[in-house]
Image (cartoon, rainbow, N blue to C red; front, side, top):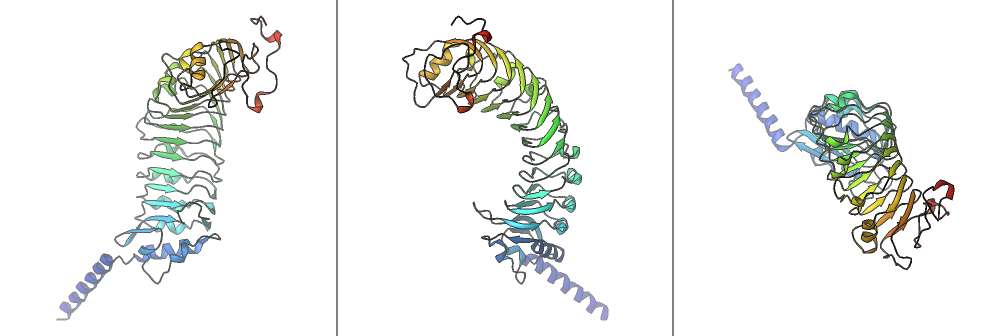
Length: 397
């Protein structure tokens, strides 16, 4: 009889536990982890996010806490509304005890300290976004072991060190956003099998060459680093790119014609050491093309007439401006901005009496010709209308 009584008690306890799960009573480990998170963070003045965190109630009903059964599955820290002041404090290592966590996000604020190494224990983590705070230290190498991680966004922080090579080999990563930090060293190579769609590493201190990148990429921004070398063997295989920004580096060599056939809406290669002829094979229809401040030479291709905003200034282009570009500009076609200043161009077929549409911008200053029409140029174009004659051997005045 005693044995039956004990068995009955066990059954009652199991039933009670099942009922607690059904009612959403939080796992004690997760409960204590949330308490630690709350102690390590505070609302900035004007934020009231944590006013809803009353631990006498069920934490699964807290703002930003999402549960699956009796486990925390997602944590969105801070008021997500635009203009919210955000949070201060640090991310507590107790976050790593949330074993069912799949998403962790932090609104912009003043949270400092390092990314907890313990996050590598969240084996189900798919989404980690903590941008626009004051987080420092290095990216935990162990994050490369999170096989389900799809998005890693630590942008606009103060993270230093190098990019762990293990991050590049994450089998599920689609969005890697590490821009506006203090990362140094080289960009790791990505395997061909990577599903990466967005890679944003701009405004860091990265050096070395542009490595092999997966053909799945649709967005690539590496601007404002110290990258060197050529890209003519890297870019042609990125056939799905719709945004490319390699500006403000020290890259050199030619730009292959196939780049102009990519499905790009924006192509920004300005302020590098790229050189050679620009010879697209077909009409270019990219909305924004910025090739300024490089070392391109030779004639300007008429196949660029289909571009919306074309910046070719501060290069070494020669010859006359193609009539197709002028027609698109004066005729209120698709071309809205044409910057050709600081080259060695010798002419343009446009009547001095022509009145440019108010919606377009044309700059011809400091070439081997007298600009036939007045068009306001940006201030940094300078005040000299023409190059000195000794720099223009083909110019006849």
